[in-house]
Every structure is written in structure tokens, then in C-alpha cells.
Image (cartoon, rainbow, N blue to C red; front, side, top):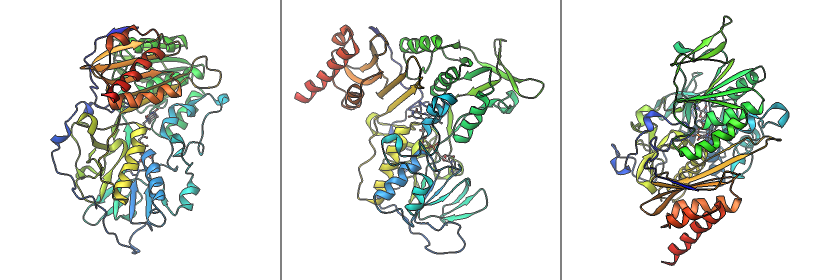
Length: 494
Ligand SMILES: Cc1cc2nc3c(=O)[nH]c(=O)nc-3n(C[C@H](O)[C@H](O)[C@H](O)COP(=O)(O)OP(=O)(O)OC[C@H]3O[C@@H](n4cnc5c(N)ncnc54)[C@H](O)[C@@H]3O)c2cc1C
């Protein structure tokens, strides 16, 4: 049990998954620089029949076939508005899937039953139906695969694809997500053996490398780095994680909490090199990556390098809709409307008003992808007009393969601002509370029970006044959470 004073807030806004320098600031949402479409009836008309266009379904078009697109499709179906009306244009060869699986069960060692498609198509991650390619066919949803959109004509309501197709839309939803930030080619960022992980194709290439790897270096101490390093030791590979900060996941974890995870990783066989920068990646005579060279001159041998240093919102070719210069992404309002009537943006790519904390945010997390998709499509198809009111929620799960001596599953809700109270010994549970001006603002629990995890959003949403001194004296996670639960009851009675 310890108390740590921490005045740090989410320095990188809410793009915690793959934080970007562009998402550094919190912008109060009343400071939007342009006025967004104001009418709720933002559906646009469309041309019903024309041989000029390559898509048959034109009333609604979604660009991007990822997490948000899958949940949006489900919402269209639930409202009886998909059949013959909805078209999804995707860069990938697969129907929408639950992307977080790619650095979790997808990377399990081959003998530990790794996840593969069609097992994790949306919407299985939230207990929904598994939407296979056949499901889209059965629902009358037109899917265009492996053909990214490269241009838009807002006046004519048309899109151009990479293969040269011209598509027509009545209403457009942009759900293009993010792309992984790469090391420049001149420092070895494109060498064979250097990996980035954003989609199934990336994960498959990584798996074939892991099958032959001897020395793995993971660059980046965020979610991707933590998950991939945990996966690599599961393959019994010599694994080193390198990052410039002083501890893992510094945008969320306190130094004390990070230390516990670092000890666990260390005991599992991961070597840490912290507080250093990479100068370049070196290749052997066959052109394959062979070493990571640090700015301090150290040479770390590696035949497989995985870079997890963040992601950028995939805004191209939609820049003209209005980008948010602080957090990146396409600016939308609380109903996900862009500055152009009839055009919406959801998921990772959307910069939206985070109502709870009165600022603009971009959130690179699957929970937001799912909820923003639902909220946007409901607002589009029904009389729903209340603005999106998101409660930030982040989680990670690692070391979950069969036979792993210790599984890790933490959940965080709220805002990590204010002073910190940490309770528990990480054996396996620990809880961290963030308390600002006496109010409980954020809470993270490792290895909670279902009931404990269920309590967290309630606490973070209702922000009860909490007795910090009492919390500090709690002798267990269970006792600390009971104190927090009681503070909710006191608040309710007032
Ligand atoms: C490896 C990995 C692990 C993750 N793990 C977690 C986790 O544990 N917990 C968590 O909360 N979040 C996690 N995330 C983040 C989460 O997956 C994203 O927040 C979520 O997928 C966002 O959904 P989206 O639909 O906005 O974008 P995406 O799911 O990325 O989908 C975007 C889709 O659009 C396509 N596209 C891009 N440009 C175009 C174009 N011009 N034309 C057509 N298609 C285009 C892309 O190829 C992609 O298919 C993870 C992300 C990654 C990459």
C-alpha cells in the first residue's frame, strides 16, 4: 500500500493505445475552430441507378472495414437499413474483425491454439454475432475488399478507389482507423525482419518471422510493445524490450505500478533496456535485420524487430473535411458529424468532444470504436439526438496462453489525474486510484473479479468524494474497493 503524489494527466490526450505527438493536448470542446453540421437530419440523397458507379448499394457507404465498420454494420442491420442500402469499402482482404486479438491470442505459440479468422470477426468481442463474409452477404451488405479509397469528390458525392472504381454515396461514414508509425527507411525501418502490426497481414508476416527467430527486439514500451514482448517469450524466444521512457506505459501506469509489471516480464524472461533511443537498425550481408544500434553506441543483436511506437490517424484522402490539428484525426461533433453534411467519422480517426472532461479527444481503443459506431448510426437512422458521452476505458490482457504461470488482465476507467493511492501486492491483484480535489477520477484494477471490474465504470462515471486516508489504510484490494463502493452509496444518499 502506498501513496504517490502525481499531478500528471494524460499528456497524450486519450490516444493511449498508440499515442501520437499530435494528440498531446486536451482542447476544451467549446474551442472548435469551425462549426459542424448542425442539423440532425444529415442523411443525403443519392443516385439510385447508374452504370457509372461500381457499387450497387449507394444509400450508405462506410470507408474502412475494421472494428468500427463491423459494429456500424450491425447497427444498420438492427434498424433494418442494411439490405441493398449499405456498402463497405475496405483496404483489407477480410471482413471486419476484433483487431485487439492480433497482439493477443493471434500471437499465441503454434501449439497453444492461436486465434485465427473466422474466429474473431466482429462482433464477438462484445458477445455479439460473428459477422463472417457470409453474414454480410446474407444481410444484403455489399463488401468491396482490398481496394482502398484514394479520393473523394464532396460535390458529386463520389469516391475513387485504388483500382480506379468510382463509387457513389448518399451518406458516408469514414472508419479508416490508424496506420502504424514507421521508422524511416534510411535508418532501416523497412528492412526484412522489421515488423509493424496493424492488421492480419502484418500479424501473419510476424508469425512467420517468429517461427524462425532467435533474438527478438521489441521497440516501444506501450501496449503494442508490452503485448508483443509477452507473446515472444511465450514462443520461448530471447526477447528484449527497448524504450526511451523510464518505465512501461508511462501515459497510464505510475512508476510503482509499472515496476510490478516490469518485474513480472523480467521473471518471464524479458530483458529491459530503458531510457535509450534507437539510432538505426542494421542489416547483415543478406540484407536482413541483424541488430538494433542505440544512440549510446550499444549494439543489440536481433533477427526480428517489432516496432510499436504509435500510430497515426488514417485521414487521407479526407483532409478537406477538417482535421483537428492538436489531437489529429477528422473533427466531428457529438453525433460524429463532420463539417460536411452527410459525412461522418467514427473510431480511431475521429476527433470528438469528450463530454465528461470537456475536451476534444481521439481515442484509439476498441471500446470507443464500438460505441462511436453504434452512436453514429443510431443518430443517423433514428431520432436520437443526445451527444456521445464516452467514459474512457482501456484494458490489456497478456500471458494468457495455456500453461502460462501468470495471466495478466487489467482494466482502467476514467481519467488519470490527481493524487494516487495504490493498494495490493500484485499477487495477483492491485488497484490504483486517481483522486483529484477529493473526487475519485480514475481507477485501474489488475486481475479483478467480474464484480470488481463491473464496479470500475460506475466509480469513474460518478466520481464520488472519497476518504483518501481510509483508502490508504486498506489492507487489500477487496477492502479498498468496498470503501470506494461505500462512497458511491454515500453520494447517492446525499
Ligand atoms: C495490434 C493491435 C492491438 C490492439 N489491442 C487493443 C486492446 O487490447 N484494447 C483496445 O482497447 N484497443 C486495442 N487496439 C486498438 C483498437 O483495435 C482500435 O482502436 C480499433 O480497431 C479502431 O477501430 P477502427 O474501425 O476505427 O479502425 P480499424 O479497426 O483500424 O479499422 C480501419 C480499417 O480501415 C481500413 N482503411 C484504412 N484506410 C482506408 C481507405 N483509404 N480505404 C479503405 N479502407 C481503409 C484499414 O485497412 C482497416 O481495415 C489494438 C490495435 C492494434 C493495431
